[in-house]
Structure formats: C-alpha cells, structure tokens
Amino acid sequence: MGIECGIVGLPNVGKSTLFNTLTAAGVPAENFPFCTVDPHRGVVNVPDRRIDQLSVIVKPERVVPALMTFVDIAGLVKGASDGEGLGNQFLSHIREVNAIAHVVRCFEDDNIIHVMGGVDPKRDIEIIELELCLSDLETAKKRFDRVEKLARSGNAEAKAEADAMKLIMDGLGKGIPVRRIPGAKEKLSQDTFLTSKPVLYVANIAEGDVKEMSAQTKKWIAAVEEAAKLDQTIVIPLSVSLESQLRAMEPADREVFQAEYGINEPALDRFIRDAYRLLGLQTYFTAGVKEVRAWTIPVVCSAPDAAGVIHSDFKRGFIRAETIAFRDYIQLQGEKGAREKGLMRSEGKEYQVQDGDVILFRFGV
Image 1 (tube, rainbow, N blue to C red):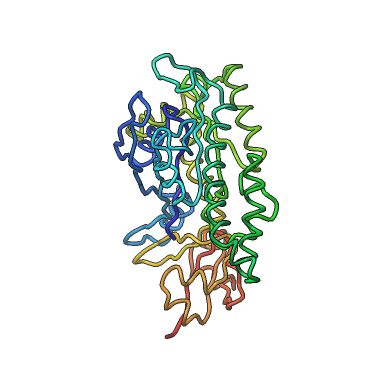
Image 2 (cartoon, helix red, strand yellow):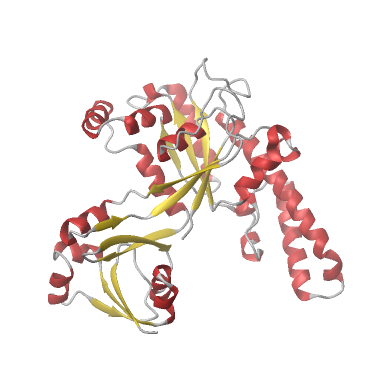
C-alpha cells in the first residue's frame, strides 16, 4: 500500500529537521520561512520488533519491514488559502497525502525566528486549521456549483452530491474541519478535502525539556492536547533537535545518550508507529527461508484482500490462508511447532486477518 503522511506546520517549527531525522534525506532546514518549497518524500521503515523475532527463528535470506512515506511540506502562513507564501501550491501538496502530522512549536529560541512573533501553540494550530478550512470551503463551493443545476433537474446522484456539499460548506464556514462534521465523511464519494484527513500532533520541545519539563512547556503541551481532544487523536512530545542527534550517533553511543536522558526508545519510533496506526493500518507477516516480510493492510481486512496485497493472482485464486497467531509462532518456535500443536489454522474467505498473523496463502489460477 502506498501510504503517505504529510508533515505540516508554520515555518520554523522543526518540520524539515523532523523529516531529515526520519529519512536522513538531507533536506535544507534553514532559519527562514519557505526554505522548503517543493515537497520532499522519504520512505522509512515502520519500527516493529516482531519482524526481528521472526527472523531469529526463520533465519531468512532477507528481511523486508513495512514502509511509510513521509512528505515534508513547506510551512504554511496566515493567508495561505489566498496564496500568501505560495500557499495554494503548498496546500495542493497536502491534498495528496493520506494523513497529516502537524508539528507545533513548544520551545523558545531567540536564534530561530517565529513567524508570528512568539510561541503560542493554540494560535499556531488555529492558523493552520483555518487555512485548511478556507481552502476546503473553496473546493466545496466549486463542487456545489458544478452539480447544482443538474441536481435541480432531478438527477439523484447530483442531488446527493449537492446536499453533501451544502452540509460541508455550512460546517467549514463555521471553521469546523470536514472530519468533525457529523455525517460528512459518509457522504463523500472521494476524499479530496484537506480537513477530512486524520491528524496527529507533534509537540516539538526544547532538548532541555526531555529529561525534566519546565512549567511553561507543560502549558504549551496542554494547549496542543486540548486541540487534539477535538479529533480524539494523539500528541507526541519530542525534541526534534535531540532526536536528530540520536539518529546521527553510533548505536553504542546512542544507548549511553538515551540512558542519560531516561529514554527507552527514540521518540521518532513511536511517532512512526502512531502515524501508521492513525491511518487504521495493521501488519501481517509471511515467513520463509527466502524472506520474512511485513505486509501493510487495513485493520478490517479479509484474507483474500490481504492476499491481494502480495499479488492480485493471490486474491483472484484464493483457496485458503494457513494462519498462525504471532504469539503462538514465537512461543512454539515457528511453523513446525505450531502445526504439531494444532495451532496452524486453515482460514477461508470470510476470515478477518488479525494484526501480527503469520500467513501462508494457498491459491490457484
């Protein structure tokens, strides 16, 4: 599955540094607005210790983890929906991604310009959200104008489209993102709205706040959490600067550094996993001597659909899915042990694949 998560926010909040740290792409991250004009894409592994556990047992020739693509989108500013700061161009880049990671500045640094003059997470979030709503409102108006005449003539499909656009325009006009408008998502025939996309927040804190957070930083993060509650989503506090340093270190040095800061794992690993889950995705595995591979599928996915992620012929000629739960596979040290204990199940077309399943598909075409 081609999964893309766009990294957005005001200029100079840490977006490009976050992207560089995730992907080691070397995108410029300078101290002035609009340093990043064209979107940059980088593919990263989804951290999953389970694939390492499988590999220890199977000892395959190669290991292929699940992947996500992150897109570094230039900083938006107030007035972006009207073209300020090349806003229309940047907004079109957001339209192409599956989810949004909104980076919010929660640190003070006199050496890094804040385009709004000072740190205020609530204001910054509202600026981005308003610009996305205004852009979507323009999109909804255009779609409404296109189908209105046909809807008045009695065309049922056009009327349904016009009714959906009326609902969406009313909500957007009040500053409500499409994802929060009751019934809006169900009425959309295609997902073209910026504010319909799932969002998570990255609260970018100062390096010194990682070990012991200041009272001011706690207030800033609380403001981000209030915004996140509206979408029932998550906030990931992390120091982009510190994470960048960690990624650049040798493994042994990184362990020492993490221990000093009381870090169990890089916060970026959690960020990647949470972005993956935000999209309603899960992983199943195939495991053989040639390859152990993680496959990305929706949380609700039938066995034939999961097989189709490997190849369309697997879905078309699906016979059965020989399935072992991940825990059983590990406890019984592989397929042979699970089969002997009767824990390798033969599942049919109605089976809903579970996260972590280790599957061997049988098919014929």
